[in-house]
Length: 481
Ligand code: ADP
Ligand code: ZN
Ligand code: MG
Image (cartoon, rainbow, N blue to C red):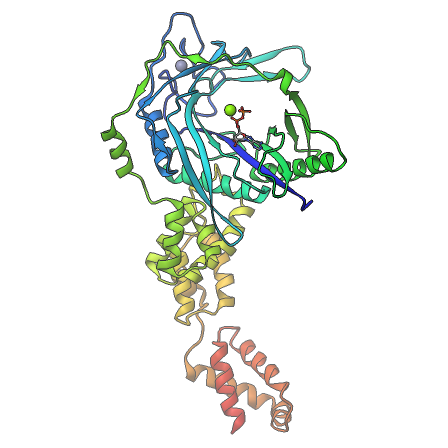
């Protein structure tokens, strides 16, 4: 294995979150009746003309700027010709030689350091419709709701060297798109799709090997698994003296293998040419600068800030900033009680376990958090102030989930408050000691073990509410006498 090095380049298609399609006014809303969102333009009727949606360009410029691309002041639309029933015009309007964005990069963490994955280009294009094949196999239906939905294609240079790096790149890219509010990043629903190009080469070689393109992966896990499988297959083939062919392969998620779909001889010739129905796209510098000025804080910057401002470890900062909704939640909680590390632990631990269990994560965005950020903050404050113990907090947390009320209120109602009044604790201890004379003398005779038993008795007598640290201290003092 280690004699070979994988070389990977990814092509991502991201559906843009515009209200309407790229060249007509039809809605982009998901889940409409079949063909409800269609009109003569996106159905490819003869004689109609496309009109560019300005928002699409704005979103692509935002993305280009956030990924350090050069934005082309002059770019062009192209026709990509192929025949398929979900493509009513017989061509897709895309960009070819002159894309909107070029020469960018995205940073990832790799081997304890930072690594730049270069972006070749980002261009805009329209999506195709969907064919629905009847299960009995005697007819197919065409739904054109998706035809003309705007896409960005983001193409990386072959800079990625492992399946893990590919996963990190995709997660960072998705986070950037989400922070920019240009794409929801949902791989399962297909609004964030990835094709992976992969080859292997002898370590130390400066030439690239024959590449294979893998399609049909609909989760981050699938991309990583498909790449791992393909790396193994290619290395095995070469080590056995075999040859690889340039081809497209499909990931079979059930069998966890890739299967050949088409080889280079059957590759499409798309006969690209400039789109005659649209003018070249000329963008004013002023507009680019206005878009730049409106960019939000990006995950990379936010991660650095979380580490410096809140003293969080890299692991926490990276996890919290992998999604904007999570980062926002965390910051809201910290604002009401500044104990970042404790809040981070609760968010990454208990809160996320509940979110997974209850499947509250729709479209990779949590719209209804099971616990409000200020309630979580209040609970952490009560722990910090010694009003409740960590153990009580676990129970309180569950109660908060159930009742969606403030922890303070629940604690008062249920009388959960920790007993920190020394007088009360002392009384409880005196009672226990009076009832256990034998154990007390055992302890005084040197049986250290008995101490734990006596603490347990005091906790029991106070129904678990006594502050354990105080019980320890007072009990030691009394037994010492
Ligand atoms: P094609 O002509 O097949 O479209 P491109 O050169 O445009 O190929 O590259 C498409 C994608 O494949 C890019 O993401 C690029 O980084 C990646 N790529 C190109 N060559 C290789 C290679 N030898 N091994 C792995 N990935 C590659
Ligand atoms: Zn339309
Ligand atoms: Mg290409």
